[in-house]
Image 1: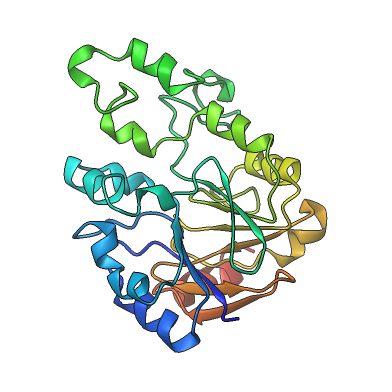
Image 2: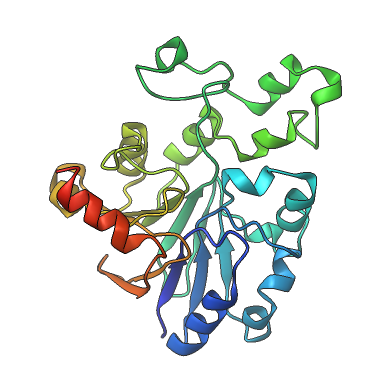
Length: 255
């Protein structure tokens, strides 16, 4: 069985994903958000679908930047492959869960330095929708379109009651300089052994935190691709476009 490929923020580019999946005979492809497809997502990934390679994804904040982008993701024929807030089984039997989107202070930003000391302004989309002026409501939830790319407490609560082997997130967990300890707690609650994220366009080494965290954490860089095996070991298939510069900074400036 071929590897499962975890793909960092494509931002409109998919050729490298299709080529890597073909070269490695991937058994599945998982996208970590900020896809920003130029066409409906199922058309961008048509070569994979023609070869019956399973595709899963979570959305990123930029996937709700415009009505057109929203339609290309949530309105595509792959919309049901979004694993946000649920668990699916990968071809190798591992359970994959997803948390798409980002934390925003206007809704929920779990940091003591944030407004309201990290307490949410709204716990659910329904609650937020009721407080949203009618002219700003959009789509089935009644919230502004950009908040389809926002994390609500209800998303975290739903996942905390589930069990998974791998959690994919757009935001980073606590090891990252811009990450969130709340995600560490979520991973631990779910019993996951690996968390893989995008969003920050880097692949920082967090291995010195793994024992303390109780799980392995991997970032996948801008348009990078990483395979993670059944033992939680990662192999870089395609380096992220900014990996060298970001890793140099980590070694020399952020230590």
